[in-house]
Amino acid sequence: MRIIVADIIEKIDDNSFADIRDFSKETIVFSYLPEDVINKAIYIEKVNDYFETFCVKNGNDETTLPGVFTTCLLSELSIKPGKKTREELYYNKLKTLAKEIKKEEKADLDKLLDFTRTFVSLYSLQMKKKGDFDFCLSNKLLTETMKGLKSSKSYKALLTKCKKTTDVNVKYSKIVFSMLLLELFYLHMLINEPQSEVGGDYGYATDNNVH
Image (tube, rainbow, N blue to C red; front, side, top):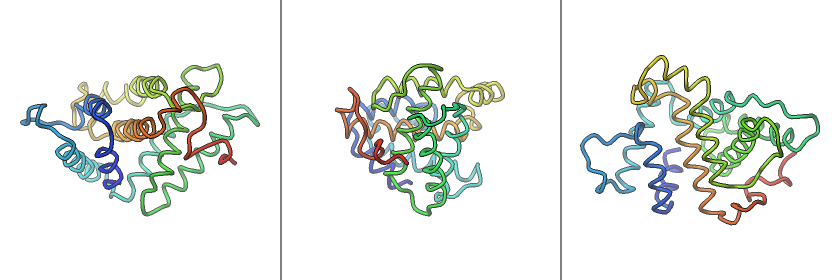
């Protein structure tokens, strides 16, 4: 997982790197370094430290991190798609991906991207409560999903208990860990498939791959 994340961070553009930095500023904390000296190499080192501490505090090892990511996000999904609908096909695909990712000893980036995009599409439909299933890649869907997760019952309960977002129990919680990865994976897709901003299916998970 560390290698995958490091590779994505190294390749993202400056604007996306700034987005990640802004979102994670209470999670990936630089206590003594000024903002203008924090480059991608320094950030990656700090993310690796975060992963290591997360594993210690949650009793995980690095091989289980992809499973933590998928299990946590699946628990936030309460949508009940109709029978024989497009969203039901994607919902079943999402559950299959989660099982496959959890079983594998080595993180598979393509499957993690498949899972991320499918989750965002289903979660955005869940938040709308009505409307069409939207499988396009867009900044709007990502923003809505991140806002929704920060308003979720599990995240609010965590804040009620810990009071501050900087509390270690929030910082190293599974939901915050999963949101960090979700944004990183989704931004990676947006950068590599910019034409999907206006719709269409993504190369890693298309209708033809949903069974």
